Length: 61
Image (cartoon, rainbow, N blue to C red; front, side, top):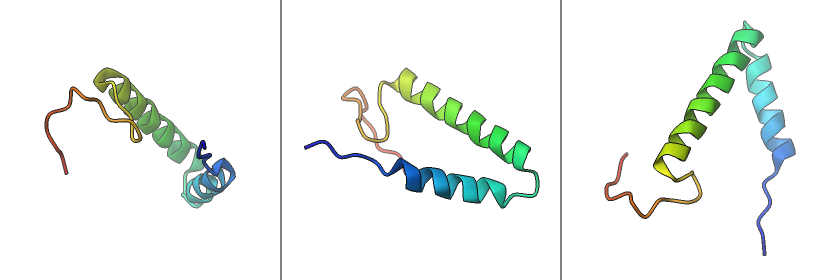
């Protein structure tokens, strides 16, 4: 069975957090830049939060 994520809950929490910031535009831009960098790193490493690369030979904290 496939596990589905609760995107409504994630979206609601994200919007609540971003809208609570003093400068919402800057907060959204920072979040987006962080996400793009995270995805680029996952692509380069060949892994994601859910799927780990078999090439990885070390652990990080």
